[in-house]
Structure formats: C-alpha cells, structure tokens
Length: 245
Image 1 (cartoon, rainbow, N blue to C red):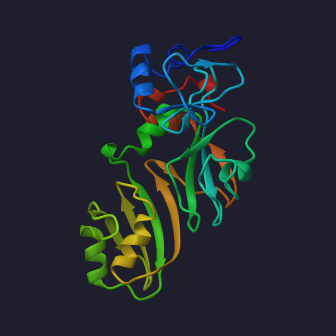
Image 2 (cartoon, one colour):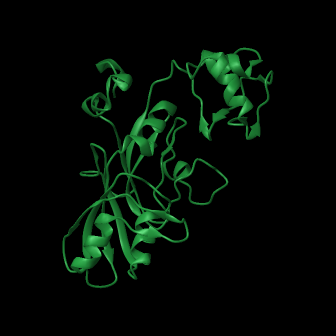
C-alpha cells in the first residue's frame, strides 16, 4: 500500500491488509488505534508521513518485506519501541528498517528476543492462549533444593498480581542454576516467582522461544530467521524462498 494523499483511517487499515473496514471501525471505537500517539476517531485522515498503531504495534505496508530477527540482548537494554526510552533496543540495534520487539525481556535480563515488522506474527507468538514455550537459564543466590523445584514446577502464587502462575518445566542444572520453560509471560515473572519463594535471581538468560534458539548468536548481535524457521511458524507465515534473506 502506497499513500500519496490523506485517506480515512479505516481504509488505511484495510488497504494495509490488517483487517476489514468494519473491523477497523470496531478497533477505533475501542480506542485501540492511534496515529502518531494520538487516539484515532472514525473519519480521521491519515497522511503519508504519519504512523498508525493498533494496540501499540505499528501497522506496516502489506507489500513490505517481512522481517524477523533473533537478537541476543545484553543486560541494560530495554525492550521497547519507544525512542524516548533511554537504552531502548531500537536505537541499540540501529536496524535500517522499522521493527519492534515481540513480547518483552526485562532490562536486567539477557538473551533471546525476537524483533519483527509483522503485527500478526507478534500477536501469534505473544498470545498466552497459544501456550508457546520460552526457555530460560536462571542462577539464584542460594542452593536450589527439591522443594524449590517442586514449587516452581507446580506454580507460584504472586501476591502482588493476585495470580497463580501456570505449571512449568523446571530442571536443576547445578547447585544454584536451573532451566525453566514457561508457557506465559507475566512481567518479570521468574524474578517474582523466585522472590515469592525467598530466592533472588542473580542472572537470567532466555535461550529459546518456541523453535527459535539463541545458539550461535553473540551477545549484542542478531541474525535473520531462516526459511525453515519461518515455515515452522505455520502456513500463515510461510515465505517463498526468494523472500527470505
């Protein structure tokens, strides 16, 4: 979609391949659509220079090349697309095209974060209902015992959120280090779980999201998803060979 003159916001979303005009009107009524950070209203016109967001995710040209990067994020980098945030991942990567993080990995953690320009892909991977696996290596401040592993595996009640975490796969790797596989992604979840059990996280590294692995990516670097990795996402996101770098 190329815009040469202002068009109505619902037509913009439809032409971008994001949704139908009727669905666009519903999203606008729900206050989920913004233009350059301002909430859109029905009939609002979009100019070529403006950026449209739905649920905080930029809506891109449907004819663009789809991008999916695997990034090894260092500690201290914030996973946000907001340029005003100091040490944000967008400025850190300095990628030549507009992309944004899929989900989050908190500032004090390191490891794998996915970056994309595909809104549907973001929704597919981050939706809790899809139960996608995310694997971490975690080092804590004291010896890991059987009771700790049992509680982390069965779920921990987070008092500040008034919620129980979902069951997880937890394995002790050494006296103070474990691997944990989650199927959800509450903010700073593993740290909160450990704190609730009187443990403190010293180091947290994500090594896998679904079938995407951190292996071979140096800290602070990234690589593009392979054709095979795209295909494993399902037919909705399959890319012909000539569209994959």
